[in-house]
Amino acid sequence: MKRVLFVCGENAARSQMAEALFNHLAREWRAESAGTLPGTSVNPLAVQAMAEECLDISANRPKALDLERLDDFERIISFGCIVKSVFPARDRLEEWPLPDPGKGDLEMMRSVRDEIKRLVSALVEELEGSS
Picture 1 (cartoon, rainbow, N blue to C red):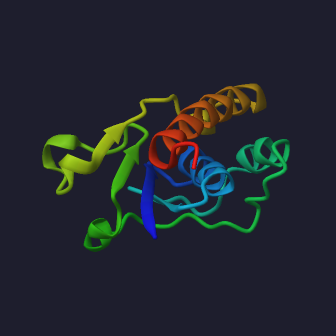
Picture 2: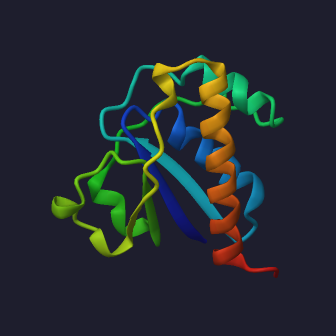
């Protein structure tokens, strides 16, 4: 199965939401997420925002980006947390520079979630088409 990796700083909000949304929508691809400096837990506001989409990420835990596993992924999406010029898989890296909602309130988390949902939906459509 082909894989996508979503990366953000703490793996506590944006990448967790993207992974859950992608895996909910995709049939032929799977997503994982990771952080460059993983936090200790998923942001409670991200859990709440995703529950509003009927997706439960409450049991998820932040994971560290493992550079040894990059070849496992056909696409790598960063939320502005990777220095592209020194990243080993530059050919598969794309940036979705969205603000870090972890420093905001629930409204900001919802706004970022909705933008991630839009971007993830377009990515799934691109990767899987209407098949």
